Length: 89
Image (spheres, rainbow, N blue to C red):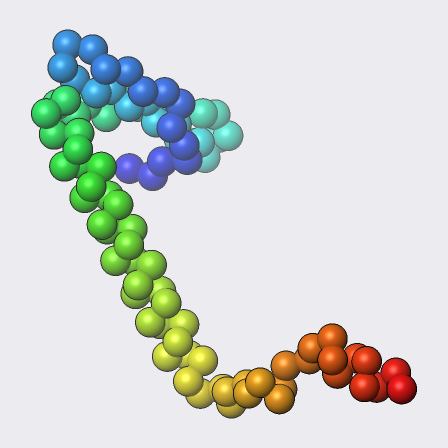
């Protein structure tokens, strides 16, 4: 299921109901509900948080691998206000 956003949350009868929105091919927005037992909400949220952290680490590692091929900048390569002052004299 592809989710474009969350429309609302409700906790009732020990069930967390999350209404999610999806935009169809025709441009109409439809909603569906996710039902999570209240006792599992912390586990559910923590699992998502840990999953996102893992994805971020993978993206950082992937980006650092790509940047390894590029020459590293040194402090001398970076412009500073001191450089501007020296050039204006």
